[in-house]
Length: 299
Image (cartoon, rainbow, N blue to C red):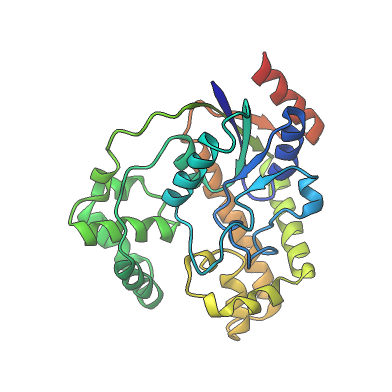
């Protein structure tokens, strides 16, 4: 059976270089499961790997879509499954890399066929902007207490998604998530790169400084006309929009990006812990991590 080797980890944990090393060892390709690296217009703020960092390894779902056509987890699942079962079917192993837990799970496990409603999406985003998250949390608690007690309450996108479904269908979001998931034609082996918290935070701070030096402010200016899209309602872009709007100065903007990225990393780690079969690897040089995974997979 084909194997899907998953390299997960919080932002700035070193996933890209490890995925490339594994792909070289197995003479295979990399599928990216980063919810913002799909978009051609975004590079610096998403830490998209450069051609040099890819080292000649074919990467799928990098620069694959325009930002004007947002990619959902369900769409990613469909397109990635078609790719694996078609073009990549003869590869004994394929490497999946990313930090977007929902997109990784969509491919590895599958998603329930939950409906979408763009009108309700826009309505909810407007309410979030005008009134904040608390009234929406209260609505979720009243309409779907089961999901309310499960959801990460620091993640507005998850809350908006649940309310979108509830308002559209008048059925609790938790009920939609109980359908039987499809079987996968491949074996999934998941690894998480785990750094000591203080080292991870320093890596994040250094990465943000590099992003600013590389021209993040200009990148955000260039995509300003898309600022209402979900892909730009995220860390690194929201803060720069506040700076460009004159709400905060540059020093505060940089400080907030670092703080919010650290918060995001904590949420990523919480998500990864949901899967008891995942193998957690203590961070070490890429060559050592690569050998550790090779030995585990091929034993």
